[in-house]
Image (cartoon, rainbow, N blue to C red; front, top):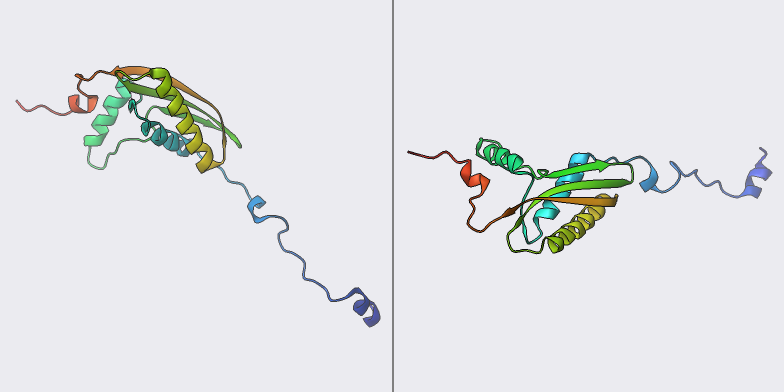
Length: 151
């Protein structure tokens, strides 16, 4: 290229590196367990939800709580199927006696969808809720029953 041609084109601008929006440079994957944890915590925040999971799972969770270093699983009672842009959730809950189960289920669904979509960017296509038990006011919790009794 001659000197006159170079001046005619004007100053050269450096080529843009990477090209495109930085947000599109790469892939983000979200593990099922992450979505399950978010959904479990969001469901527990709803008034009327006493516990998550079946009676057996709650009993195991209570035992795990008493083991040094053990902790209650935030994913208990939650199963997620996560795709690239969508997720579907199955929740198993125990409700407090006296609450309107349909209202609690609706509130759980709304809270879970809101939290998962806000935190992950995934579209929640469905939240299936199974009510496995009702906690009566005079019933002892499984956590209390799992404690060793002194005689």
